[in-house]
Image (cartoon, rainbow, N blue to C red; front, side):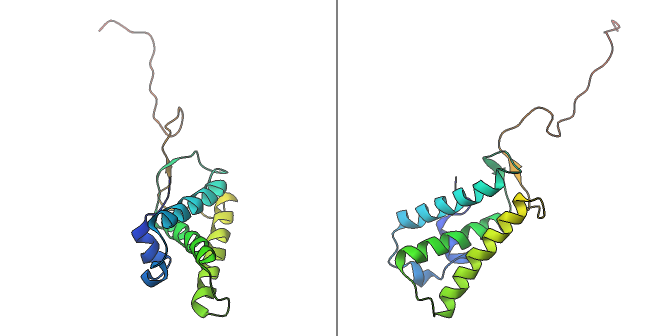
Length: 131
């Protein structure tokens, strides 16, 4: 499950013009791959798949996906825009490492697999009294 969609990739990761020659399927594959990379860090603290997540996870997914697309499409390591995309990737990985280490708490995280004892209230009483 990808933590971002194609329109968010252009809003948060790459300028629209950078994706002109990149097929939609390739953009989706980059978002899936970026989400899988982040899952590797998230599973250290959370049960996957996540049912709810915040904009921080979406933004970091787009930063990683942007780097994946850029590497596939080709880039100029001297171009400041391309350097910024690489820095976005590096920052996303550092964030994921901090999440895995418990140093950062992502926004609105909730896993999609309800389990016993995960914040669910329980109630019990003595034997029935017949009233």
